[in-house]
Each structure stands twice: as structure tokens, then as C-alpha cells.
Length: 476
Image 1 (cartoon, rainbow, N blue to C red):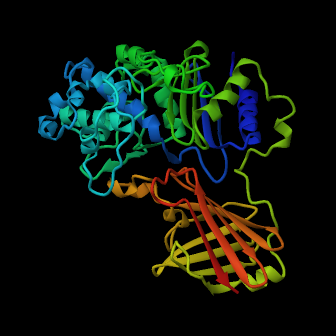
Image 2: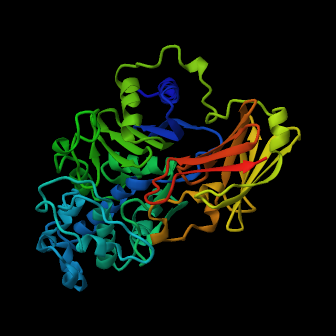
Image 3: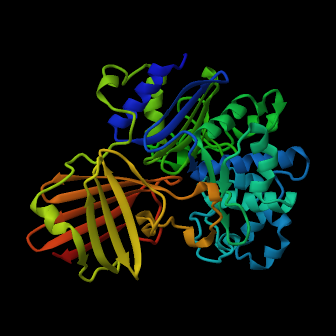
């Protein structure tokens, strides 16, 4: 099939009708750009966290070292890290090979928790095994992180630096960054940040057998091995998990609709379908790959969802808060600074201001521990916030945030976009999105005869032990 503008818009409309938030999408076919789209407030050049799509990049680095004869897949990981032998608590870890890590068959049944200055490898080495290595599939980001450590040990370079020279530069990828643990290792399972268009370049290189502009960048033999079935996954997922039951390669997933994919948390995707010479890359904030793949198959294979949908859905922007710019009595009572009653989030004050400019906007400030969290929101538009106090989204850190180094480059400065609306005469809502984050933050303030009750929550973020919702009340 030939993918064109109509297919692309039908796919986006289908996603929107299902409530799936896709920020940007790029489709390549036969090496040419077939379709691209971004929804305001995002742009195509923005970088996004790839989460577990990173694993496929880690795999490529291992494949490069294998081609050079610097490692073998059946070598035990511990052979490269003798300093950890004394800490091994289960003798089965001594059998764990590079192949086991690549195929997610380590043999453990949970990922270790990491915090602050923890050595991430120690969480794995100090854990007992549930299964013999190589026998049971269990998706474990620590497998990928051990591979990142391996690349660094074998090559003498961090994974990020290794791929900078050998992959990103040849593909012309210039704007990217990679998170690290506090011991100087690139996070192998979910640390890479990249734009959707550059992710499509990676997918095109894979589709072309590792070649880019006539030159082999990724070893062709590795592309063939890494993107074909290496481990059955069907026994380890329920029947409704149709995308995860098709098997796993070397840090790549096999797909129900044919081909393979790199998949990341909250709907980060690079899908390669060789039979149609197709590459589809997406940056999203949704539940996962299945939410993106099922509608894509419908559009690719039989065109379902294309009839009558395009004229009725605005695809130019992410959905805005649907409400009024101002309210009556409730707004007058809410404007100003109010002291919060005791609450588990230790918030101290809530302050609200409205600005009646050509384009109305509202400014909300929350304080706790004498720190201000501020957001300025547009009405009927996404308003950017780049300077000033802390961003509201920072109240909801990613689960491993404390165990990572803050190495964000200067060009990747944080930015929040926000909109607001009165959804009823007594209810004010804010919706927030962030540059280079899948986090979606929401604020709802309800006004009654005595109090203002403020709910603050986040979606599209894995909080771990950190809360993803706060609630507070202030007397008016």
C-alpha cells in the first residue's frame, strides 16, 4: 500500500477520537517523507524522552562491538565485571550471558528499586533468581542498563559517546541528549531524548539493513538478528496484550501486523514494516504501543476509521480546556492569595490572577516550603512558560529521578505550555504540557460558599513512590 496524506490524517483522527494524545508523527516510505504532523504546542524539531525505545539503540551498540570481535553473546556478563563477583548472592547470576540480557531472559521476576547514589548493578546482583537464565521472558530495564555498562567497559566510552560517533553523526542527528545514573553510565533502558524526525531516521536505517546514504552504519547481520524472533513472549502475556505476545529480538519487539518496533513508555514508537517499506515514528503521551498500533493497522490494512472523520476533528492543536474565559462571583472570590488548610502535600498558599489583555490569561501560583510553583495559562491557546519560578510539573518527578544526574543540555531548556477555562460557573481548570516530557499536569479548583478546593494531578509519568495527585483546600 502507498501511505499518503489521507492515511496520515485518518490515523491521527482515529487516535484523537480514542482520546490518545500524539504530539508528533513522521512516516517514511521507500526512503522518502510520506507524512508528518505535530500538534500545538509542540514542533517537529522538539526532542522527547524515548523511554524504552532507548533499548534498541543500546542493542545497536552491542551489535557494533560484536562485529568488531570485542565481545561474544554467550559470554557471561560478570566476566567483564570481576569486581562484582563477591557481591553475587545467587550463583545463577554467574550464568547470565550477554544474550540473556538482550532477550530479557535474565531470570529475575522484578526490577530492583534505585535511589540517590545507588549502584544500579548492585540491585540486580544482590537479588535472588526466580528462573534459570534463558528460560523465562520478563521485561526488565536493568537488563539494558547492564548492557550499557558493558558497552562502556568494552569500548572505554559511555554508551552515549560511543553512539554519538558511530550512529548519530552518520545519520545527521545533532540534537539529542542522554540521561545517566550517578555513577557515570548512560541509562541503557530509557535514557535517550530525540526528536520524532530523527527517530524516523533511525528506523529508516534499520529498514535499509543498517545502511544510510550508501554506507553501512549499523552492522547488517546485527539488524537481521536483532529484529527477528529470538524469544517467545506469548506464554508470558495475557491474550488481550496482542502487541506483546509476538516475540522479542535483541531489544526489539516483533509486531502483530508484521515487522518490528522500538517501543517506549506512554506511546513512544518507531515501527518498521518491511513489506510496505514503511517507517512510522511517534511521540505520544498515552498508555502504550497497543493504543497506537491497533488504529495504525486499521488504517494501513483496510482503511477503517477513514470515513467521515477528517472534517469533524481539529488536529492542529492538542485539546484545549473547553470552558469560559471568566466567571462571575466565583472568579471574584477566587482572585488573590489564600492560605491552605493542612494538607499532605504541605502546600501553604494558592494565588490566582487574571489578565484581561487582547488574549485573556490566568496566572496560578502554589507555594510550599517557601518555594513557588507558577503557571501562566492562555485561554483558547497554549501559552508558553520559560522563566521564573519552578514549574508545577516538577511536583511529579519520574520514579528514578533521584538516582540520575541532571545533564540536560542548555539548548534543551525546560518549558511548560498551559491553557485554562471555567468549565462551570464554580469550576476552573488548567491543563499543562511540557517540552521534552510526556507528563500531563492538570489543576481543578472548585469554589463553594466557604472554601476553594484545589486538585492537582499528573498523568503520563511513572511516579514510583512519589505521589501523582495532591489535594488541598483554602478558606476564602
